[in-house]
Length: 97
Image (cartoon, rainbow, N blue to C red; front, side, top):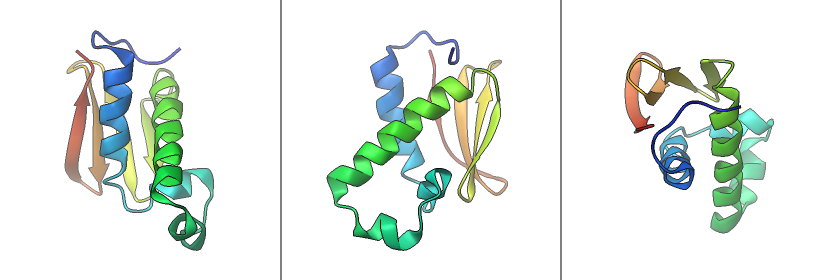
């Protein structure tokens, strides 16, 4: 189902993809090893990150907190944001409106 949003879906996915790229080991979500990730070309890494953004967008509709590698992705319906954290520190967020 995904999360409620007022912005264009494609814009949200673009921003979420960029935000997820800030998590250094986000590839672990797909059970990849660091060697596999390093071996990918930049275009292939982008495809993986885009797939991850799509998966998370829909999963956050039913599961508001999802661990992605060393990061945490949190849907906050009150502020209409998807927050990206490493540990306790907010790295960035994606606005849904």
